[in-house]
Length: 510
Image 1 (cartoon, rainbow, N blue to C red):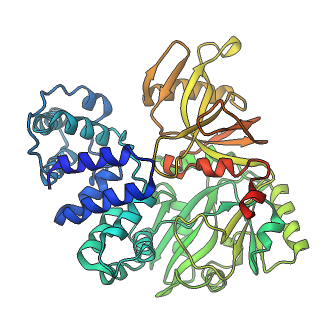
Image 2 (cartoon, rainbow, N blue to C red; image 1 turned 120 degrees about the horizontal axis):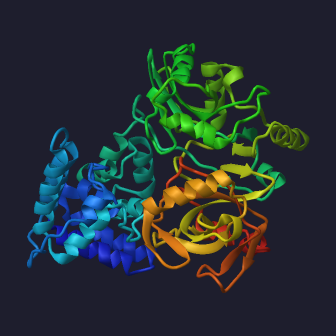
Image 3 (cartoon, helix red, strand yellow; image 1 turned 135 degrees about the vertical axis):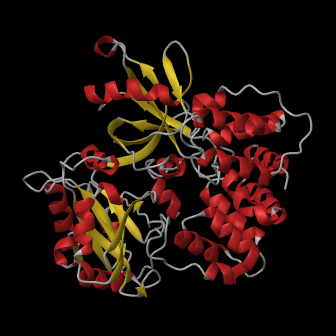
C-alpha cells in the first residue's frame, strides 16, 4: 500500500464531523491494507508502530528536504525506515537518524512530508480516536466480526494494531484467541461521574468503595515474577520495589489485580497526588513509600475472571490479597451505610466514593453506568490549550490557562473556559518552564500549546455561553492538579461538560 492512500484517508477523516463517515473511510482503507493493516492502524491512530523513535521535535522540524514530485513511497518502506531510526544508538546515532529521516522525507511528496512530520511529532489529529478506530476495525472485518468482539480483543491485547490484524486476517476466531496473558497489561475499566449517591445506588445491588486520591496500578503476579503497570499500561516495576515485594508475598500463585497506590502521611492521610506520581519516574533509592489498595481481581490461580460478575471478582480479590489490602468499602450497603462510607472517605482526605454494580463484567475503557464516581465537588480533566502571561505579582510567569474538552468524534479539543485560580507559586514556575516545550506559537499575551497536558479542574457548575465554541463555559473554575498519568484521550468530553448544565440530566431522561 502506498503512503499516499493513508494520507488521503487521513485528510478525508479530518475534513468531516460525521463519525459514520470517519468509520467508513477508515474501514475502506483497512480492507485494502493487506499485511500492512497493523501499521496503517497505528498511523491513523496518530503514532508510528515503533512508538518513540528517538528523534526529537527540533530534529524533525529542522529537516529541509525537497519533496518528491510523484507518490511512490510505500507504507512498508516507511515502517522499515522508522524501525531503523528507532534502534539506532551509540556514537554518531543522532547523525545517522538524521540521514535516515532525510532519505525518508526525500522520497515523500509535500503532502506526505506534512503527514509524516505530524505523525512523528504527535500532531496528527485527524479525528481517528480509539472509539472510531475500533468501530472501523469492526466494519472492515467479515460478517463474523462485531464491535463487542473487537472491543474485548482490544482490552486484552492492549494494542489497536494487533486487534486490527487479527480481525482482518482471522475474523472472530482470531479475535477470540486473545486471552488474558500474565505480564501483558489489559486496558482498565473506567468510572463515569454520577450526579448523586442516591442515583448511583438505584442501579441495583452494588459495592460502595472509597475513591482514593492516588494513582491507578495494575499488577501481574506469576509466582515470584511481578510486574506493575500504570493506567496507560506503562511498566513501572523498577520504580516501585515495595509494591513488588508485597505482591510477591501474597498467598496465591498467579493473579492480575487492579487498584490504586498512594503515599500516606504519618496520620494515614493521602499525601499530595504529585508526590505519589513522582515515584513512578524514580530511578534512585525510594524515600517515599507507596501503599497499594486493590479493588478488582481479573485473574486468580489459573482462572480468568474478566467476564465474571463483580461479586465473584470481589470474593476472589479478598482471597488473593486479604482484607487489609482491599480498598475500604461496603458490599451491598443500605442507603445509610453508603452515606457513612462517603462521609468516612471524605473525613480521611479522599475524593469520594465509587459505586459499582455487582452484576457487571470487567469492560475496559467503558465509562458506562456500571461504575459511578461520586464526589462532593465537580471536577473535570481538561486539556491545556494555551496560557497567558501574568500581571502584577505574576508578571513573567505563564498564568491564565485556556482549557479544552475532548471532542468525542476526534476533532481538536473544544475550548470551554479559562482560569488562573488555584495556581501555586510552584505551579506557576513549573508552567513557565514546561509550557514552551509544548509550544506551537505565541503572540503578545499567550503561549499556545500542542494538546498534551491534562489538568484536573474543580468547578461550581457550567453555564450556557456563546463566548466559547462548545456553547458552554465553566463557572468558578480552579486548578486542582496536573494529571501526568493521563493522556489527552483520557480527558473529559465536551458532552460530559454539557451534561453539567442545569437541567441536562432531566432533559436527557425526557
